[in-house]
Every structure is written in C-alpha cells, then in structure tokens.
Length: 245
Length: 202
Picture 1 (cartoon, rainbow over the protein chains, first blue to last red):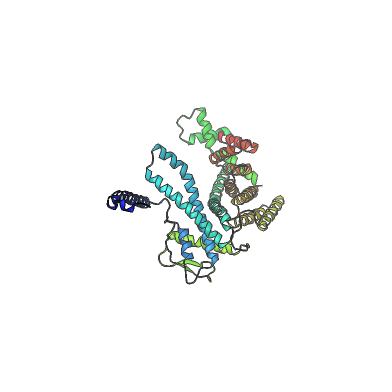
Picture 2: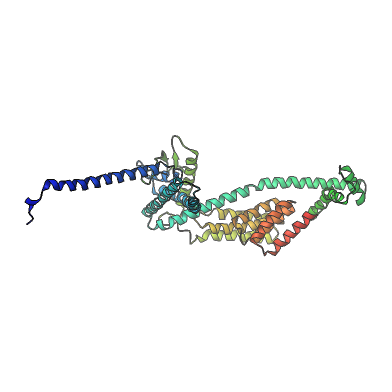
C-alpha cells in the first residue's frame, strides 16, 4: 500500500503548478499565434475575384419557397465547374513562373501566400463540386469536370471563330472598293490608249517627266516610275479581266 | 473567393414558366451577373434536351452519332454541288454544315468541333475562291487555320492565294511564311511563296 501519509501534498503542488503554467502559456501562445497568422493570410487580397457561379449555385440551392428544380441546379453546377476549370488553368500556369520569381526574390512572400491560399481553396472547391455532382446523379462527379473542360474550350473556339468570321463583311466591302478602283483605272487606261497610240518609250518619258523626279536621267529612277505607273496597273487589271471570263 | 463555408446570397428569382429567362436577378444587378444568368438559362435549355436518364450531360466521349451523320451529309451535298460547279450552292451547304457543327452541345469534345469546322471552312474557302470571292475566301481560310494550324496546308495555301489575288502582297508573304513554319515541306506553299516574291520584285 502506498504510504499516502508520507507524501507532502503541499510541496508536490509546486512542480505540478509549474508544469501547468508552462503548458498553459504555450497553448495560449500557439493558439494566438495561429489565429493571428490565419487573420493575416485572410487579410491578404484573394487571388481570384468572387466566384460568381458558385454564389449563384448556392443561392439557388438555398432558396426555400419555392424550391428550385434540380434541372436549374444542375445547369448552375455545370457553370460553376466550368469557372473552376478556368481557375485551375490559371493556377497551373502561374505556379511555375511564380516559383521561379520567388526563388530569385523578385516577388514577395505575400504573393506566394496568396497563391497557396488560392490553391487550397480551389482544391476544396473541386471536392465540393464533385460531391454535389454525385448527389445529383451517381458517378456524375467523375465526368463533370471533363464536360466542364470541353465547355470551356468550346466557348473559347466559338468566340475566336465569331471574331474572325465577323470581319468577312468589312473585308468584302474593302475588296469591292478596291476592285472598282482597279477597274476604273483600267478603263482610263483604255481610253487613253484609244485617244492616241503611244509607244512604250513615249509613255515612259511622259510619265517620268510628269513627276518631279530629282535625277531624271538615271536608269533606276525610270524603272521605279514605270513600276508604280499605270502600265503595271493595266497589266494587273487585264489579268483580273481574263480571270473573270 | 470567399472561404469554403460561406457564400454571398444573391437575390435571384425563379420563374419556370418563362421560356427564355427563368432565372433572373432582382434589385441591383451587375453586368457580369446578368450575362452569367443568360448563359445559365441557355445551358439549362440545352440540358433539358439531353437524353440521359439523369438529365446530366453525358461524358464527352462517345459522341452522339446523329449530329455527326447530319454534318457529314451536308458536307457531301456541298461536295456534290462543288463538283457540279454550282459554287454558290456549295457555299450554302458548307455554311449549313458549319452551323450544324458549331451547334453541337458545348460539352461534346472541342477537338472534334475544331476538326470538323476547320475542314468545312477550308472547303467553303475553296468554293468562294472558285467564284473569285477572294475576300470571303481569305476570311474562311483564316478561320480554318485558326481552328487547326497543323496539317492544314490547304487552309494556309488558300488564304495566301486569296491575299495574293487581292494584291495584298505584304500580308500574303507574312502569312505564307507563317504557314511554312507549320508545313515546311508542302510543295504548294513553297511555290506560292516564290510566286509572291516574284510579284514583289516586279
């Protein structure tokens, strides 16, 4: 039997109190420190703007009277997944570059913390979406992000295509004008030829004398003038005409 | 983004009887929200016509064969018209086929859409070129290349040719050079480049 009587309870409380105070203060410090750190991280600007699609989905989900039919929720969930895909792509693209910049010391620690927070958030978000999807239909969680990724890409290529095809009318207008200009030039040329048959040499000299060319006698200048002169345009227009028949 | 446990409640209204805009926002609304709701409503309408039992979009593959068959048919009709030298008819058919291909539900594979649309646009460019509609041909060929840059030598060549015909030599030269980066061994492109250079020297 333990000799209880021999224990001096009063002196024994001293070491116990010491241990209690020590662990207590450590615990308080650690919890305060963590809270402060979390608050710091939270006070940093978030990486992404508010997740509109998520807000819409959750707003619809939480509507009570009347309850929103599942079909709307599914559509909203799919929209949300598509936005998540955009965000994942951004995160993946940014990660490598950011790591390099951080190693070189080009960006501050804040940015890295914001990034890591975004990464964590997006992981949570993906898990949440998968769970929600599985709640709507068995195994939808496995394919929802495939569908969402295709949706993101499809939207992008359709936008590109619409942009390009929209230029069609203006291009056409430009070409019509240009064609008309070439044709009228050609007609003028024809008229001139009708007025009087000019030999090639005569026309060259007339053109070059009509324009203020500084060194008129030089061979090079003559060639340049001929290149820009009506002779070439006429040749081009003739070709056009030939193609049309 | 908010923390995982919270969200911003938006003042949304649901009116299932409305055909085009069942989900709307009441009170103050931002532009982004309105566009997003439009997209949501459109997607919802698309989802209603899905024929899976759960009314969720099926996985991207396998593809619903009906639409592919319809597109193939339209393309064939276009080819037939082209061979008959009825070029406006061919342009028309190709245009319909392109619309059909772009009308695929968005959750179907985007790679497939690229492939189909690129081929169709390239064909339409050719039909336009046959009518000397160089401007339209150039735009179609550009779009075709945008959809599929690699192994699309015809697309590259056609825009180059159209630009050349319109007398836009500088643009044509840059374009063909770009094309040669993807299709260095393509004889037609090399020839076209020489043609352009010869024209420029004149």
